[in-house]
Amino acid sequence: MIKAIRGVKDILPSEARAWQYVEAISRKLLEDYGFSELRTPIFEDTALFIRSIGEETDIVSKEMYTFPDRKGHSLTLRPEGTASVVRAFVEHKLYAQGPYQKLYYQGPMFRYERPQAGRSRQFHQIGAEVFGLAEPDIDAEMLILLNDLFSKLGLVDVNILLNSVGCPERCRPRYKRLLQEFLRQNFASLCLDCQQRCEKNPLRVMDCKNESCQSVLAQAPVILEYLCPDCLRHHQEVERLLKVADIPYRINHRLVRGLDYYTRTAFEVTASGLGAQNAIAGGGRYDRLVEDFGGPPTPAIGFALGMERVILALAGQASMPKPRPLIYLAALGQAARQEAFLLIRTLRQKGLRAIMNYQDRSLKTLLKQADQMGASLTIILGENELASRRLLLRDMVRSTQEEIALDGDNIASLLEAKILA
RNA sequence: GUGAGUGUAGCUCAGUUUGGAUAGAGCACUGGAUUGUGGCUCCAGUGGCCGAGGGUUCAAGUCCCUCCACUCACCCCA
Figure (cartoon, helix red, strand yellow):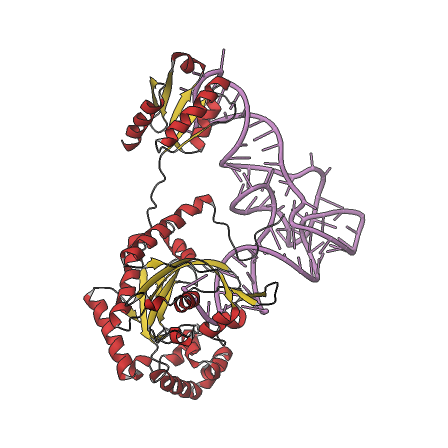
């Protein structure tokens, strides 16, 4: 038997409703906040991801689905969305379209990782990016948007974590050196991984789960105390606006993000009940990336949320909207089926959700099928009904039924009324 | 890439410790009790390369080896 390949999943009909729900609510809210959708290809020139995400990052060094096409060009299935959006923004000169741009995207991403709870090789993100605004107001707005989204979805138990990673021009290098200095002094207490990180990427020590490393970090210098005046002012203003908007958040000094391009504001949203991977959204500011890709200097900020994780966190929490009531048309015998075949078309044209039997079965079986299919109303059309041009309308919940005239338009409006009742 | 756990019916799982005859249960499915009235109840039935391959043995679901898959965790991220 051929099976779906490792780390990818079918979204079965029983799960698809939750997906549609999250997608619909997100889309609506993003549009309300003035975002427009941008759809980019799911594969790109490999160089795009290497240059934007960073050569040394885990994503680029070991997680990308990279392959040569038939002419030998190196292509990569996108591991995240921001790179493509930036590429499209520059390529189509969207910066010339207005004072600023608000874009969102949605779709599958690919990373070659060992699957575990809340992590798969193909996963789905909804992301939003704003180009052309350096003001802290938009940073705060992005967090407010996330807060609104999760509360609209009915997700309780979410935490917004906030930090600043400074700027690559001034504060970050300085802080990095300080941290490195500190880590070296405590080198012996660090785990093997972190001893290596200490040289390669000291910031990464921050989110090590090793107890010993964490206790060392408790004494480590805090980046917020070493921000340059501009970055500090920016950060303080973001905080002030969040407080004014009454958005609950927590400063997390350990929050450093795994992609190289972030500047200043970095954030993450976590939820409970997800296993070890508890981040449902993450993002931050990336003020240099557009310029790096040949666009004009353009400040930008964005986030992405993980569909699978949001849905996982939502399981049992939110009240999904119920599907529209289903009508089952049970026809007994060849002649009745013929009649039903035409009648059901009328019902559908009137906008009703209806199915029928295509096989000759006993009424008992048909009612059972109606029940299994979740019908709330069943229309019974047999030889007797056909002869008298009437049919039976059975309420599957109350187990009551009545006789009505066999007339498509009439039936449709009657059903409509019943469903609304 | 590393570590741990699990693979038996469509699903959830017994049976593996200590090898032994036609491999079980619940749920689901099909039929009947009930001629054209679903859910509840009762009765009957269908359904298994016991993850794959190799080995030990008179005998393997059970013991040994190899591989594969799934799950969780690490690394890291959404």
